[in-house]
Image (cartoon, one colour):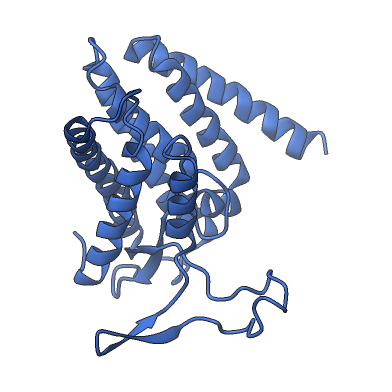
Length: 263
């Protein structure tokens, strides 16, 4: 399960994600009681979806002989900004601050949380950004005896990273199976959004780890995820999986041909 070190980042992530997805309740006239009840429901659905996403990382990491540890997606310097704005560009973080008489260390700037809050508040909930966290891999002593590589390979990391978005797709498919009357539309949307955002190939996020580990795996999985998300509202599970599988196979073959064979 989760360590004490992970609890605070998980709580922050769930609350920010819930605000991003629940600030706009879709009504034309604001009603506080309805908005609060909708926000509570969104928070519960986000918590289930996000925690299973992270547990999937942990499960696959454990099978590979590692421990996946969740933390907020952050950066440690602002070297890309003008010198006139940020003078101390190197080793900007970690940084220690005093708060209520206690001294705390901020190890990195939580760029994902900040971007999400800014986009949500500026757009009044019409737009959102959901990629808030990342995972670190810790070697589980004694569990990789007999393996060629003591440290994680790029392909192993890709499989661990892919487990997160794919867990959301599994939840989406389960919800789609029981969604005869549209009661689980929000749950389906939340899992679709999490899967797509975490497939973005940005440094330290799941998508970049999959892309760096295997470009073919990234392209194939992205095609499958998009196909499932598009078709879940129109087809039952079996036809959906068949069509998504065919689209994935065709896309993978074409990508392999033009990237490796033709070149």
